[in-house]
Length: 87
Image (cartoon, rainbow, N blue to C red; front, top):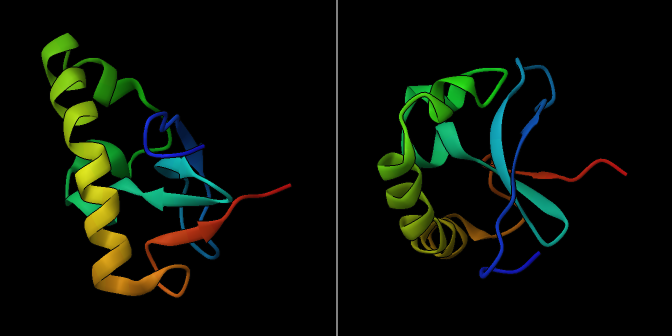
């Protein structure tokens, strides 16, 4: 998936609890690490979904910027914020 379509999902980083991320190409961006938002450090999307449509739209609007900044600042794919997508 490219920057125009970033699907949410729950993934498990090596040695850590499941959390929310977005898929980009063949990696997953850890949204809790990239944004510092606690609702993404949960093993489901429930807390994020409970925030409602305005929060969803605001988050969706900034995701390409967050992803691009993480890629530029931390270097893909070496960053701890990016994890290979499981096959």
